[in-house]
Length: 337
Image 1 (cartoon, rainbow, N blue to C red):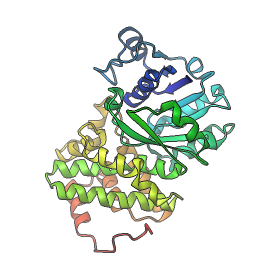
Image 2 (cartoon, rainbow, N blue to C red; image 1 turned 135 degrees about the vertical axis):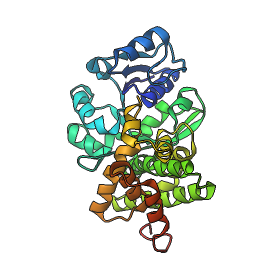
Image 3 (tube, rainbow, N blue to C red; image 1 turned 90 degrees about the horizontal axis):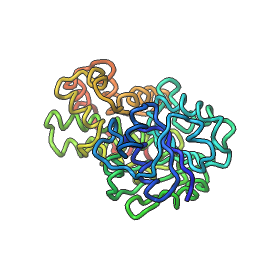
């Protein structure tokens, strides 16, 4: 049994905390909202972010970061990616130097165009980057919290930290594989949200199953090109954080990013729609960061480019579709091999 701190009480953070508690770890969940803390203690439920799921009775929540983090052997960071820098800076003084720091947030920082690993290296300079583990895979929070089966991947430099984490979270319904390619796992986890917006828009326009499959496949090519340019192993994108998470997020009705795409196709303003939601659709922010990063490193990402223009520059969806469909033909695996 390990002492586990989960930082972030959204649906995904709560699901991970519940999973760890069911494995009989001593789990503390940090929440900003006093209602979340009260509901977890009094009702064993996160009514705000994961309603209808009964949480383990020994799962504890707190608004005190120092209390939650101090002494934890495993710290799992699950804030929205745009808040990771601030949250990591807050917890840095309390994290034990021997702790495994696991990042389950998925995104690219928009301001500096940095992966989550780069953000952590800057905000937690006293921690060994080899102790950072990146957790990703096809994981709808509600299904994980309900105990339904899934597979994930945990990646770290040198794999030592990932292998240390593996037995702490592995179970018959939450199978943990390890990887030595944190960059690939990060890129796959972040970029699938952008492609899911496009897939949702395609479904919203009733373009058919063929179009959705093409978007997923060409989206995977874009993700791989960006990952390879940043130093990732292309084979990583055939795994849980690549194909696995991409297929789930592009096809599942629980996907917030696919839903965002469908809403845009229905005529909703994306910012107004997101402002009405309690949860975050990471693809909105990642599309801007990924578009800028692709330009910076010289990678062709046409789907990502159009998602960016539709969400942030108010390009008409049908115009974005026309641009994609009338691109010149080319070799399939350009930029991947």
